[in-house]
Amino acid sequence: MMAVSFSGCAGLPHIARKDALTAADTCTASVLTAQAAQSSADGGPTFAVRAGGALAASSAWLKVSTACSTRFSEGIIRAAAAHSIAVSSANRAHVGSAFTSAMSHASLGSASLSGPEVSSIDKTVVRTMAVSQDKAAYALEILAARIRPTDADDETLSLAHRARAASLAELAMTCSSAEKKNDSCTTTDPRKKMYSVETLLKDTGTVTDRSSGLTMTTRASLEMTCALEEIEAAADVSSAQNRAALAHFIVVDAAHAYEYGYPSTPLPLVEQAAE
Image (cartoon, rainbow, N blue to C red; front, side, top):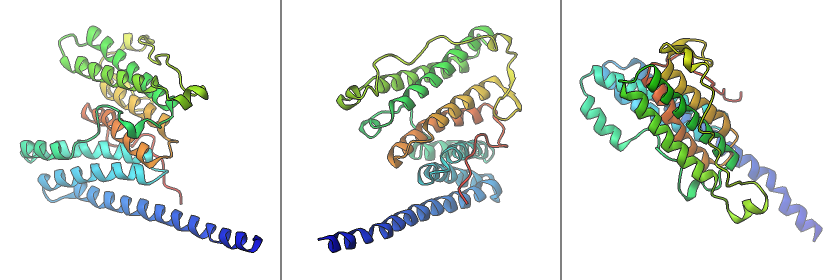
């Protein structure tokens, strides 16, 4: 019996090595695909080519965030930056309508984090993300009332964040029987609804972004701050399915940041691949 047991266990390290190599190969292939598309986005001969390359790069970088355990942040941020290149290049090539049609079939991100595939995400992660969304909504409401009462963008963004915060809060408060038994879930709403306004009351439309140290529009900084807080909360999620769902949710906020003028370099909070 013992000889059989030893024989059965002898193959386990080989299986583990094979699984690790498969994961590494998937990551490498994903990065190479994204880099190739990014090259077309950055140096294509025409703006139309750059728009197409950037659209492909955006999708490819999102796959990197899932396939590479150490590139969750990088994949999301690069996907959002590539999306920005796609939009600007399409407009300069005067193919905005065609690009919009293409985007309808390859949309960037998702409006909510819902469905059975995300039910297993740690509720602590979801609660933290709900607060980040709620905080962004509140900040934009203050700006809309104090700085730009006639500009609809702040209100539109705020309502979007409110909706996303609500969906996250609902998910966070939906506790399974196992979670209730382990006290790992609470039905208390994580949203605080009101946050410090000291900095916002001094706002002049631009701010020094805490991640990059650069001066930019307050909107851009708020959107990227929200995205980075969510990335930090979700960075240790191990399930590839859950990481994909989280990446598609978070990238929306990063894309908004670039839309409102977040600088393309340096990339904030980039996790480097292990050597």
